[in-house]
Structures are given as structure tokens and as C-alpha cells.
Image 1 (tube, rainbow, N blue to C red):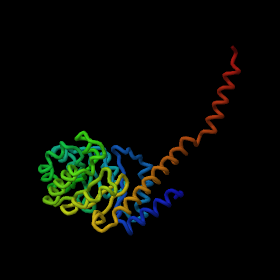
Image 2: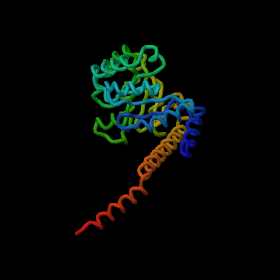
Image 3: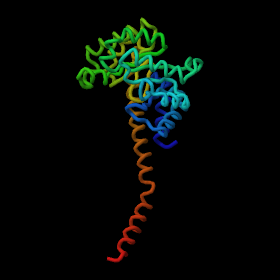
Image 4: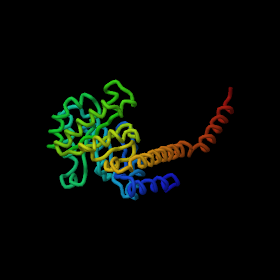
Length: 267
């Protein structure tokens, strides 16, 4: 482990022990996590005693599901599920790839991230209950679907949407996770959702037990999650910079050689 990774491991261990960290998160979707990056994240998570959440590329991304099974992922999230039919496709895909005994130790969820999804939330709740999948409310994309920017994510109107989804999740007995622009200013919204049903909340890279929004640990935990993400990005930058520059000396030598050969050619 390099210096960045040792610091990240210390943060994850502290977060698990004191601030409700339950998992680290990656995305094959918008984040475009590469396999080498994911393996590093997976090692950090396992050493810290945390689970791993992965957002796949679509509701029927079978190859992503196969890779998730190979990696040993604990939480799988499908993006952009806007209709009961799309949710049924996700359920069929996860049932095709994962045997029932393996599913018993995992959680499968789908993103509620557009207003179009919200308009069918009752029916989606029925399908989710039957298929044993939960909700992840993605507030930033949901705000975008309404024509708003990130400043909308902690508004009273957004809280109303989240609470309605929480009530459906509670009625159907399925998990609810809230993400998208999570920061200390989100704590009142998360606390209200917790009164209805909220199992976890997530930043870009860290998933929390929602209990911390009620016991005063959430803000300090979010600060740790931000520190972890910054270290993650710095480590990623330096890793790929090293790859990009590993042949720089030989490239310069070959360019000089090619220029010399060109100069020696007859005019």
C-alpha cells in the first residue's frame, strides 16, 4: 500500500468504528470505474471491514452483474429505472446471474432519480417488494429532472419527495437509501426520512448507516468521507500519471533517433 492508501485505510477503519461507515461505493455508470481502480477499492474495503456497493451501467447490464459477482460485491444499484417494466428487467437480470443463496447476503436496489420514476412510485413499490429490491433516491439527478440545480437538493420540496418515497418503502418493507449532494446541510432532510424509513445514506464514495443522523455523528462522518474521496482522487491521479509517464524517457530517445534518421536522409 502506498501512503495515500494507508491514510485511506485509516479513515475507513475509523469511519466504521465511530461514524457509521458500512460500505464504500463505485460506479460502472457515470463514474466509469476501471477494473484496476475497483480492485484497489475492494482491497481497502475488505481490510477496513466494510462492504462494497456498485452502481452498474443499466437495468439489464448483465455483464456488469457477472463482474459484480466475481468481485464479491455486497450492494448492487441499477440506474435510471423509470418504469415498472424497467424494474422487472433488472429483477430478471439479477435473478439470472445470482443464485438465491447468494442474494440472501446482498442488497439489490434501483435509483429513483427522475420525476418520471416518482410518478409511478406506488407501482414500483409493488414490483420492488415482489422482487426483493430497494430504493436509492438520487437527489441531484432528481433535481435536474425538474430543471433545478444542486441547490435544490435540501429544499422543502425535495424533502417532500423523499418522504413520500420513504413512506412507500416503509409500507412495502423495502430498503431506502438517499444520496446525491449529501452534506451536513442534508441532515435535517435525512432525519425526517429516517422517521419514516431510511436505512442508509451515501456520499459519492461512502455509504453510512442512517442511524448516525439521529445520534450526532453524521457531520463528523461526512467530513471523513470528503477526506477519503479527496485522497482517492489524488491517488487515482498519481497512479495514471505514473502510467502515462513511465515510457517518457524512451519516447524522447526514440523521437531523437527518428529525427536523426530523417536529418540524414538525402535532400
